[in-house]
Length: 139
Image (cartoon, rainbow, N blue to C red; front, top):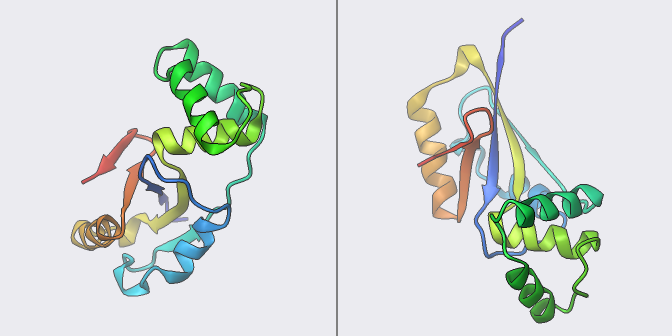
């Protein structure tokens, strides 16, 4: 069985998208920009307690600021509550971007030039490609 390379498409920070934006993105992304043999799977945003936990970790580690979260909640109409999963999810998306889709490429079909073509197409529409294993973006 062929190994599959799994990458992620992310939105950029400071943008809040609809819950179904990942599916809308994949439906509208040009198939000609995909590497051969690749599958692009759109994701929905479903806020849950993990978002609150991740927010608390980011605040505890100093990666995020309580004052920024408080201001974000005020401007967006959320209650300032670290346990509010909707507010936490939206703030994390605003701070880091959001995973929009998974990109699966069979290892035998991996081609750097095709991947570069996709990265350029993503960049033109405000998205980035991330390697979750290496915790890095393709630029």
